[in-house]
Image (cartoon, rainbow, N blue to C red; front, top):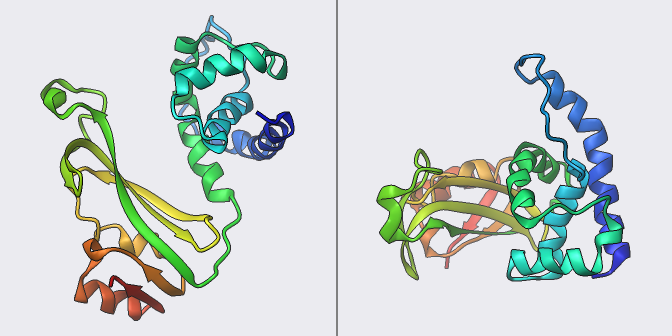
Length: 214
């Protein structure tokens, strides 16, 4: 992994968090004065950098990727924690990650591509016992078959920049989040036949968006 790329990602994340975290903390509900007894050697910026770099460099297995970091990039971070400890720290990044993704530059090119993909939370045979995503996960079906989980709905421009995204239940119709995904966009949106709808086409056309599903 190129160290300069790690530095580039870290700088972008850290600059964002310096401004965002005071705002986020000022809107949190008040808690007790008791302070956590266990501290973390990794900063939030480092945790987010590690997660982003995983997708940038193209590793397919996160555990092997983290072992790679421990072997070859331990000097690039303050102190890498164990793999299981790192996984438990990931939950801290959920809210900052959402706002960070929204802060990234988005070029309105007038040409966009939209699709959805299934995110499986467990094997469908164990769905009855799953508890973590119980309130939002559900059984759904894609072109590859049935699954249990949620759906990621995504729209990108022709430069590959993420314009917007949303998470819905596994059984939700792909057309439901479209209006929100296309908010503030003008131009052509290309999608598959799963988005075919005369009513949706007319609604979007009235907002300056031509939905092309051929």
